[in-house]
Image (tube, rainbow, N blue to C red; front, side, top):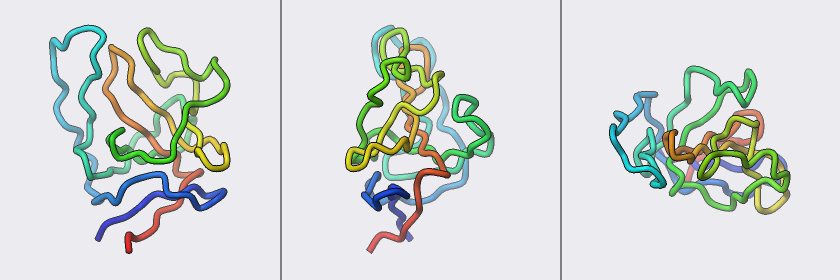
Length: 131
């Protein structure tokens, strides 16, 4: 059964239809070149619940999706949330907003020294079945 993540505030879709998998991160790629996007830890079209809360999100559990599966998401308006060497390191709290209502819904991790993931905050999104 496929699921779709929706904004808890306005009910906008925030993901493509996804298959839920158990947390088993894809292997990290070593030696990648600087200034390139690293690999995502989840395959395109899938989602996993991270068993360890992502520290910048506080004690909030997160759903990990491939960035190519995120929809209707936009960068935070506070530039302090968008820090990183080359892109976003995700260390300053939620940096993704719902494009429809501006609610904080996730954290993009995409810096040159990190994996490339979106972590949706369990407290800010709801899970619906894809119809």
